[in-house]
Amino acid sequence: MNGSEPVFQQILGAEWDKLGAVIQRHYFLRPYSNDAVCISGTMNEIYHSRFAKLLIPFGLLFGAVVPYNAKDVPVDVGYTASPSNKNIYWDRAFRFTAGKLFHFRSHMEHQSGNDVIEFVRFGVGMRLKVSAEGGAIVFRDHGYIWRIFNVDLPIPVGLLFGKAYVEERPAGGDTVRMKMELKHPLFGRKR
Image (cartoon, one colour):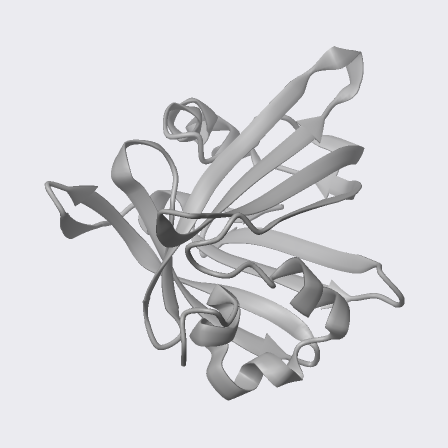
């Protein structure tokens, strides 16, 4: 693979061709470039279990949790590449009622094969496996790490937050359906 191919084409290899065209357009960003895309939509539901609500302050410290339960939330998602590295940067802006605006910012680093790490604040990251399934791009949680002094230390945050599953699936034309879920084996789901 050469550096001019989109980062996610390099991650997925031959599976890239299994993605729907609208998903490929969202993930076309090339490494070491100024590529950017912004999409807008509506999050049908953001929900936290009772247990998850107890963890929101901890998650907010790391910038890793959307703090409100709500329905039909307008969301703008900006994806950008960087001319100085191979990472992809996200800024998800949730526009809640009563003027509440919440940004969920992160960046993703390709490790090898289809393995990536999505980082939030303070070097906390989630290891993810990326795949193409039925036209969708799918991210499956494979544990959390804390990068300190360039060393990735496993941390058992999954025992608190559960396992993450994220997919973006073509829904006709330029429309995409996104699903993000954290599922704890004892305390249920958070979407």
